[in-house]
Image (cartoon, rainbow, N blue to C red):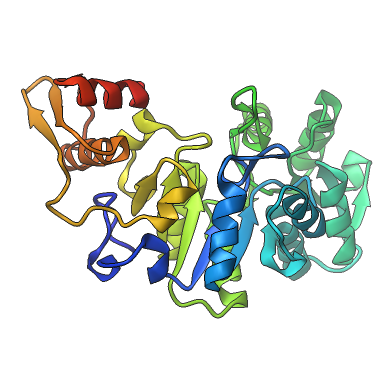
Length: 339
């Protein structure tokens, strides 16, 4: 696993910008490149710079409501040209898993969007609507999933059907803020059943990232995501470096309290961080003094480096304490972090 004790570059990233040390960039989508269907400022420009430099990209999403072709078309429409082969979705990965575990024609009850239905049907399994006919229940995100769907799934699982979830994201980023995701629906069903799914396919399971790297014969990829509990932990499980961007779900407070497996190798405000050189060890201009019951932030420089300094202290201490700021720059940085 990568050394994720501090969000600063390891020794082999000295010199040059961050992306120059990797042979593949694996992007999460929602919260990194777009929100719903609106491009995040700077994302198209960052992806264009990667193409100009010949750095390959892949796109790995837990969202099971779109087919890979639909994802590629959406990315292209918002100014990020993408090919179907570059996209890995949890719906597609789930369908491949079903094909490995179950015989052709196995009846499957599907909760989710039409894209998930298509993926399951494409590998030879048979979608059904009768709960007691199903041998497998597949649960994925869909905007039209209703209480009756959860009820049918509950009946099928209690009758012995295998329960597989495409992902467990509790929320989805949106212009209105985080909205309930598939994980929230999985939690509702788990509460009713008194147990968890038999299998959860999407991130933080490393399958999507490992498949993306394998397809491109990448030996040193980096994962770029906005969620600690899926993207960053998934990269950790895959043995890959990661970059957390603060354009989606996870924020500074969550980052400071992150356990080891959810600590990114690097942190940036947005995708411009791919083209910046993180400060070398010992050169951060921010300082954090320990006053026992609280920490004091002082110094000047980039506010993202102030967050990096606080992470180093919090992760070493294994706890988060109240933070005060001394000086105008420190006060501005702390206000930006919303701590």
